[in-house]
Length: 130
Image 1: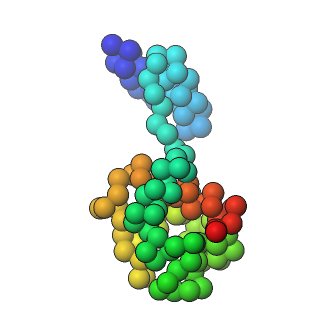
Image 2: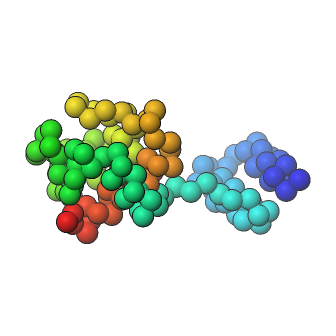
């Protein structure tokens, strides 16, 4: 019932001339008021490390790159080589679609796992890989 009311409110609000930022704020407020969980946008770094170790570490252990040594996961290399810059969205795109020798993981990992890996890569590049 709560979800139906929330959906009706969001649909009603969208009929008016409201910019997207205000719509997102209203949707989030409505979700909280009606006890509906809002979607998570940031990945879980701890889970990202687990997913990374199981799927990425063969080529990127310690933030390195065994195929293309210049294109590491170090902060400076991500800033220089990652399409879209060093941010989680750009990492999600690269992991999902692959590029050059890197395979696409969009069919192997779900969206949450990819978001978690992206959060882990960005956080670890900031702290420095061991």
